[in-house]
Length: 442
Image (cartoon, rainbow, N blue to C red; front, side, top):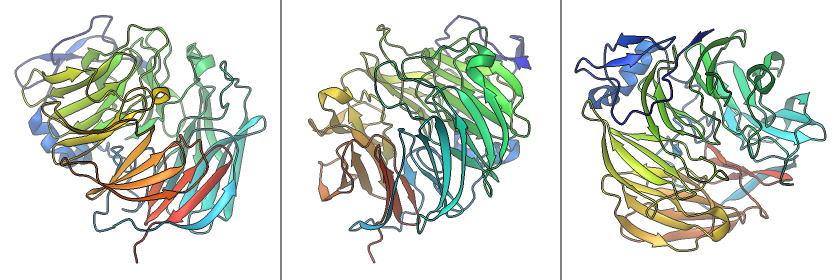
């Protein structure tokens, strides 16, 4: 296994660019960058990703194969779809966990805990009928007496589904049958600590690798595994794991670890950029997924850390704004439309506000105070706000004012898992029930 590390130094400027700067490659050696993570690269996302073979498998355009959808940005790809009155199609009793459902090739995959096992169920997304079930034993115990099921949503890529259990076990299964192909106990292998709530970051599948925020010491903070065998390929950073799932843009993987933002090459683990973004409080987590919007990278965290918008249009990134009083999301990832971010601000347990914030300036356009916690998904110019109370609020995505269109009680609370949205169907779970609703307006 090769190792790509940046040492303990945090860099305040980009380590990659077209100005002759260099990046650290495998083994900590410095190497010349061919092309930097600049606006030109980001504007050619599709070209670069296709050339490097690093796009997630697209499957169908209506699939929701991972957390936050096809591009991990919380956006439903079909803008012609207009959400309407929810109609329940089916429901099913399920086990523990906060891992949201995902959908690929009309299979809904749910990762949950039943008794002493973490189980993956594949269901017909249209009817809820079982297709296959596969499980492995777990002894995970939550130190705070909360839910003991898995937190990380499955990831479907090609003909495989990958899961990362609360105990740090990474597993690959065949999508058509559920057959286990390989399994790695990352905590045992890399010595990663349990953390506050176990492992909860959905891995990233890119090219020939599955990349996970393992959180191990001695350079095993982020580890890439071969998709065919599960063998480690490279490792990078000494950072402890967070509860944020990484994102992918223009062949660059963006991780918000417990220490901060790390942008690296998922092919070899070489690090392009790092920025410390961590609370001074030990009792804290980073949980929201980093967003790439044109030339801007947006990162948000709670516990006094705050949000920051970084402009990468020049060789050295520029901080556009940072604040703990604008859009400090506890765990929910914001969505973007036309230069405006829509998301949650504040701690979950204190009653979060829902806000619209200007991406480039940090100006708060409006704030719906004590809206309460939940998740946000964007469909065209509408927001699907799934509250922890089990209520779905459909609202306009506009910077003018908060404008709710409709409210629907889908399930009893507490709903913390992100929903899936595929072919006009929203599937949502609480601890005990998984239900699928038709949101088609016709």
